[in-house]
Image 1 (cartoon, rainbow over the protein chains, first blue to last red):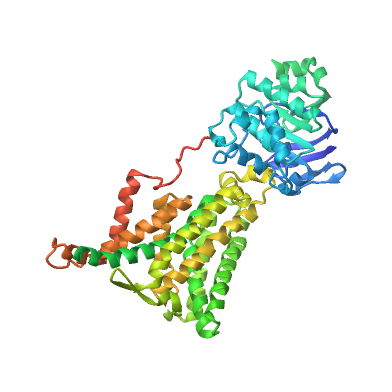
Image 2 (cartoon, rainbow over the protein chains, first blue to last red):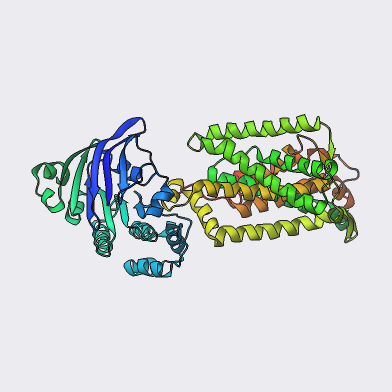
Amino acid sequence: MLKIEDLRVNYGGIEAVKGISIDVPEKEIVTLIGANGAGKSTTLRTVAGLVKPASGRISFFDEDITALPSHSIVAKGITMVPEGRRVFPDLTVLENLKMGAYLRKDSLKDDIQWVYDLFPRLKERSWQLAGTLSGGEQQMLAVGRALMSRPKLMMMDEPSLGLAPIIVRGIFEIIKEINRQGVTILLIEQNANIALHTANTAYVLETGRLTMKGIGKELLNNEAVKKAYLG
Amino acid sequence: MDFFNTTLPYMLSGISVGGQYALIAIGYTMVYGILRLINFAHADVFMVSALLMVYAVSTYSVMLFLAIPLVVTLTVLLGFTIERVAYKPLRNAPRMSVMVSAIGVSYLLQNLALYITGGLNKNYPTIPWLSDSITVFGAMTKRVTVVTPFLTIALVIVLVMLIQRTKIGTAMRAVAKDFETSQLMGIKINSVISMTFIIGTFLAGIGSILYFTNYPGVTPQAGAMPGLKAFVAAVFGGIGSVPGAVLGGFTIGICESLIKGMDSILVSVGILKEPLELATFSDAFTFVLLIVILVFKPTGLLGEKISDKV
């Protein structure tokens, strides 16, 4: 579905991504794990059109989408939940959700209902400003907002960041549920444990290069991965 | 009664010029809200708008009812073009660079105006209905004095509705907070920024008609003083806030006008025996007042708190 081939990205004067290739098959959960600064975020941001690659090719359903502007990427059915949630603090929960559907012209009623079913807490807080939500609720809103574009592929940048373990588990249950409902997921995480438990396929990224690829649950037992990421 | 009769004309003119400041101030505050840019060229767009009217009516004899929409449209087009040519290419540059570009545009417009007018004071055309004399509670004034505050408030209500209730308005608020996440939503930030300039220059175009109906001399520097006052109004009200800019505009307009009239007002109530010629200080006094208020309320009357939780 999403194919990244030999991607190289310069970011802040250094080569952050040094020729990586990743394949995300439809309906799967694929994860990209690695330490801080390994190039995970840069990879996602490049796919989302926020950063232009130096070279390489990104295709989606065999269509070249390399270096397209963000709004075209969203229109193709790729959405991203940014690192640190980044909800719009001065907008209400409902307005945040509507912004997620910015490019759509059809009725949003069913989708808002869908998001509220996934996250009943958001429904209770519909008229509250997003800035007043707790971290966990903001993460729910960030995910819900991304779903409002009716994505085929949802990319998530560190959804566990700064959240209590119990909230993280809840979020990952929802990620699996969203995936069961047909949305393909590309997930990057520093919390390798939960990411590998959740994903079908996993890639390990070290300083801009892929060092390993495998089935998520198998990598959990891999000695090198255990040593480096699972402590 | 003497006090009332003496104060009223100053009050009226203060409310009127305050509304005109408010209309200009909205352009400053909206552009700042979205780009964190002080758009120095804004005051000159306001001046060019007046010159356009002068040339449309006096030189090309365009009928007034056509000239008004034509001039407002051209003003908007100018604002839009300035953003596209001078600010958009610098979107990823440091803010200071964009500001330098804005100063450049400001001088370019002033120089162009000087080149075209030869530096001569051009007379703003008389707009019949607006410049008719009327009497308000015994005070003689032009109709524009009374029309301005109502028109200003009406336009602001429409603008606030647009920002609060429509999709593009919500997008403007989103972009003002976070460019990158807005892009992830599929929002074309350049269109939203253009929209901001269109609204800002539209209001400046309307403000220009009202202002120059009162002060009909148009020179290449004619935008500087009202522009500066409007900018201060925007800061005073809390830059980034539209209601703040309006409140600031009216406050400054009224203060300035009352200070101008302070002599006659004080004489009328018997505090002063003869005038002290304080009117000369009206601009300085206005600024002193602002400084005092900003000391107590550094982000302006309706400004957002600085501590943003992200």
